[in-house]
Length: 351
Image 1 (tube, rainbow, N blue to C red):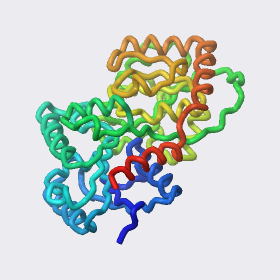
Image 2: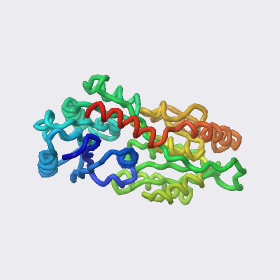
Image 3: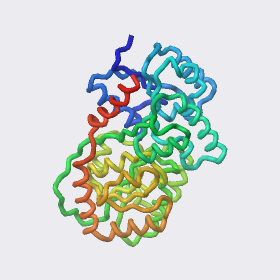
Image 4: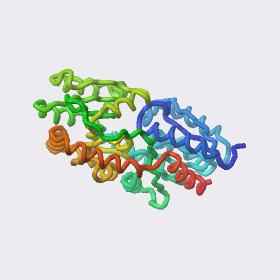
């Protein structure tokens, strides 16, 4: 029988996929393991959050095989669609739902799909003893689904410390912009490309790191939109950790034009590398960016995004001032060990 500091983690796919949600799941679990917890990953195959009947049947069989009284964490990408499979085991198992952001808030959904996801997730979350979210904003969004706030705990992601070399003069040449985000509508790449198309008189190169495979239609549209900008836009695709860190170290400015984020881990990563940031106030981003570390505009406001980019591209002094703010804020970012201890306290209360 599993020990008291053991949990099963239901995962909608491979948690080595480099997205913020999977990274949170994986790094938190590793940190909990270092603090004496036993983590038992349970991978759920399927097209979550849109499983077919065979996906749900397989998930139900996996859940039915879990031992009585087991502590089970379920990633929200799957849990929001699992009410039918969870309900027969809602009392037998101790459920914790880990919600990165509510499913119905994904950009680009039809009204019908959004309503369907909202209703399904609201039903599923009623079956969880505890919900864990990465930000106060996501707490509010989950509460809007009918979950009592006292059953929702906020545990922000941790951050890996990054080397912060002393400020030095950059060589002459274009400003290196970095955006790390999967090519999906919610990430706002189209707004970024449109904004930069109006700033071709300034010297810049945009490096885009993120998968083009999860939404090929959006990726194709973005590549067509960027075509007139030629070699000033560089597509790197999905990158492993060391290659991604090299891009952070080579960049001058980090940009994330997202329309909504449940937290925005890449903002913390950019700050940890001492980079000035240009981002939006979409969702939790309004609070994720530390004061003095960057410029923030309203989500979806293309002209405001262009104006902010023009400021940082044309003013080296401003870039260094914001970089200094990022370096100062980096020292206060929580580590994964600290956040795992907070998560452990939540789990112990459920156990």
